[in-house]
Image (cartoon, rainbow, N blue to C red):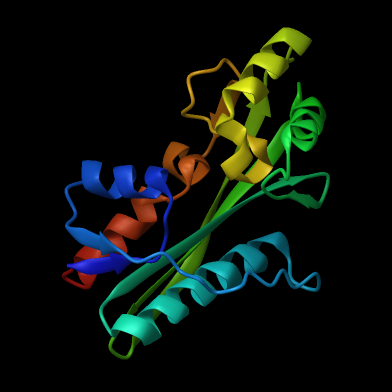
Length: 182
């Protein structure tokens, strides 16, 4: 048994669907985005920050993660409002961007951290589709302002791990959890 240091329903579902038993204690650590870090190092740094804050609180094996979307070298975080969500989707329309999910696992004296990266090509989004998606409210709590699993026809193709794009690279995380017998 371990603790997931995230309130993300998507991460919970990925882990539950894989058959893991865990409890959820969301991290309340303030996310400090260090502009000097590469996007990959930033994702790992934020995952470690979340994991460490919860691990120090509960002293149980802990998994933290953070997902970021990068377009033209710029990180697109969670949109602040619907207008910014529309702006993000228009920028992503018809283009390839990267999705990086950093992860960190802590147990006793063991710390394992890393990231996975996938490249996502968006369809050319019509104004109607963009508006319908934004009005659904699905994008406001997600990096880049969208969720690949939300049932809208946003994505043309993925080069890399689908679960990384959802928010937790299960191919890598599963191995870590199995090796650490949690």
